[in-house]
Length: 107
Image 1: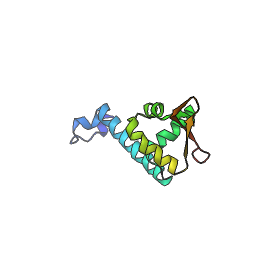
Image 2 (image 1 turned 180 degrees about the horizontal axis):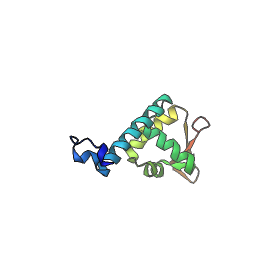
Image 3 (image 1 turned 90 degrees about the horizontal axis):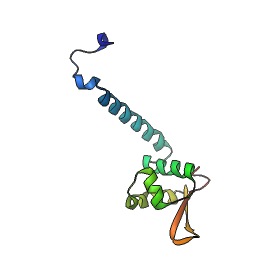
Image 4 (image 1 turned 135 degrees about the vertical axis):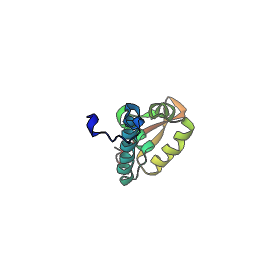
């Protein structure tokens, strides 16, 4: 395997961490391209996947699951509600809280 290495290449380019970072970046770019065809950005896709797996959730818990600051989750949720992919309803047990769920097109 070492015979295939270009001797002029910097050594760091063959290190595991560098290679994993490069592969991860390429995978993320390709995922974003696929999502763009569906008119969804990666953060929106994470929200849809979380709701699809966990079922209806409060916005705070949803933000925790997808790793988004709850303040930033508002814009993401608004965009998905506006696109008809997510519904928002008052929690019957706490009227101050909103429960988010997938709509049929969001599935």
